[in-house]
Length: 193
Image (cartoon, helix red, strand yellow):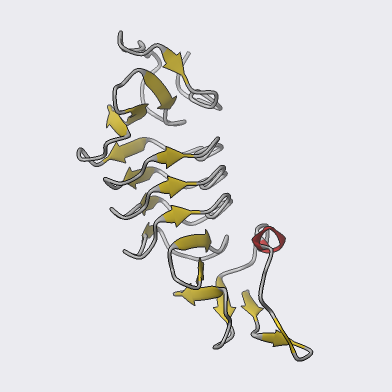
């Protein structure tokens, strides 16, 4: 249930850990880091870069329904929340700027995500397979993105980036200003006919 990342292995410092090696551990509830680990840190069982600026991995089996990023976080790594089975709501703080590819992929119970005012990049398929997602909310002060009726658009509303998988309603009309549809915008949509 815990993944422990030590400071040293056989008197050699553990300087670099390939996070991809610990991405798909369904039973992981928390990460624990050695006290003198030079590249990583953990807070409340969540894995971060040492400086706390990058959220590297949220444990798949961490039994938490709501999560807000700490104020130090500016980046959500690729696959950071992948396959968490408990989260229903995530709030990205005002300092988060970058969301990696597949960052929230297969968060099966995620219903709502809120973007703070600083998010400026949104990775490919970041919200893929979030089969209960209904609400995408973006801070009005965000200069890169906006949401309307829980749908994610670029700020100019010329590109539809993501339609929530489980948004109510069987019909949707693309707003007139939209000239581009993102590659994963309507992936796995459940209610549209």
